[in-house]
Image (tube, rainbow, N blue to C red):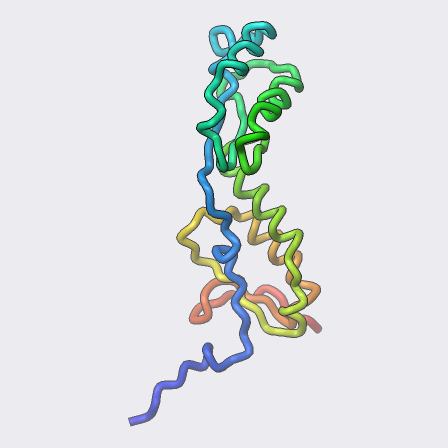
Length: 167
């Protein structure tokens, strides 16, 4: 009987798994409409008073997306003021929704990685993920890896889709 050889494990193929960079921490969404009159009208004095009396401690060490769930037309300073209150508590605050949090986090992380370890190597960007890795992270990873990698594939080693091969 022939010995089964794991050719993938013995190859020079490097796996780039975005899950390895997934930041731990609670993601929360903060809806500004709760502090608007009937959910639509910002009355500055009431708005400021509501922010002053809000329990900001609940956002301790969380990633927070600030948004407005209604079609209210808000002055630009409203979200900025909410951010001022969040800053002492939240790990990061963004303007947007929960999906935008991971996009912003991955953008920050991928901008600061050293890709030299992938220089002239065949590479696979792991496709299946148990964590909510946004598509924008895969797109940015491909952009960052292309100048370094000899080749780039996407998916799993057993069924990878070739994307790029240096000439």
